[in-house]
Image 1 (cartoon, rainbow, N blue to C red):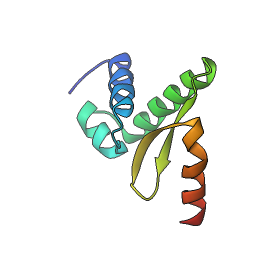
Image 2: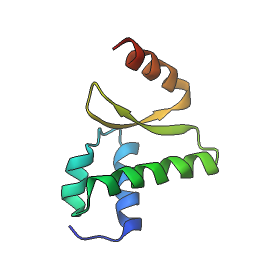
Image 3: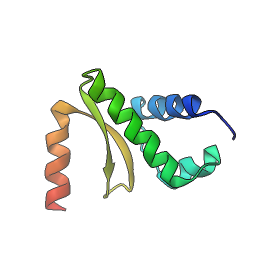
Image 4: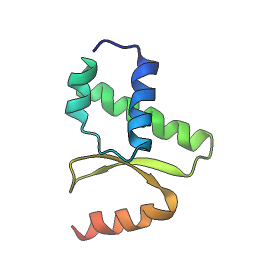
Amino acid sequence: MNVVKSQALLYIYDELKKGKLLNRNTLAKFFNINYRTVTRYISEINSYFANFNINCEVLYSPTDKGYKLFYNDRKEDYHQDVQSG
């Protein structure tokens, strides 16, 4: 699917808000872009959260092998799982 950058960013954000686990390679194929571009898009979403003081962050889950949206009150649990795993 060929879309402009803003559409891809909104799609990724919307899917994350729904609680979905997103795989970088799957998104790259879906949007017909490089997987590194997906990583940059996720970084841009995180920058948006930081710039506007939104209390969440997109993090990579090595256990689930994908990106998830975490709210800061639950992020500590995630970091403990990653460090122990």
